[in-house]
Amino acid sequence: MEISVVQGDITKIAVDVIVNAANTSLMGGSGVDGAIHKAGGPEILEECRKIRARQGGCKTGEVVITTGGKLPCKYVIHTVGPVWLESKADELEKVLTNCYQKSMELALEKNATSIAFPNISTGIYKFPKELAAEIAISTVRKFAEMHEVIFVCYDSENFNLYKQKLS
Image 1 (cartoon, rainbow, N blue to C red):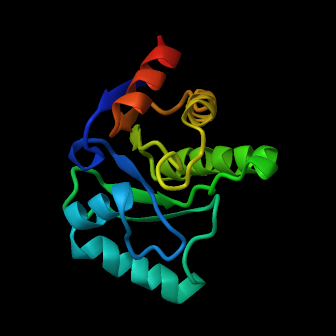
Image 2 (cartoon, rainbow, N blue to C red):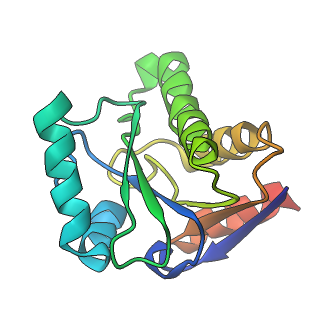
């Protein structure tokens, strides 16, 4: 498996699967979620609406999948990361691990060989960036059958953390 890190816009990464740091409503939002919905076009939103009608959205720590729409990927896996609360640190670490693990499992079910992740929960959800990077890297390393994993960092702080942890 090749694991790399880039700084930039996840909507421009050509891979089989892009992971979206979604919210439970699946209706788009700010940050990565908003960018993916905007760049991906109406097909993604339409599929998210169907998922909402069927199951009421996506629970924290879970995943759902849609088309890639106009993005340079086949699929978008939407996962809802946890909102950081120091008092629930152990529980929230498990939830964030689930986001990465279930995304990898679903990508492999779809025969994906490449996947790009944003920095789940480290924006407005305030998950500590260093801890989130450790969880992300250690979790994806368990999936040797995935050929390529790219961590796409929007900000330089996350980019430098991942770069350091991967070297």
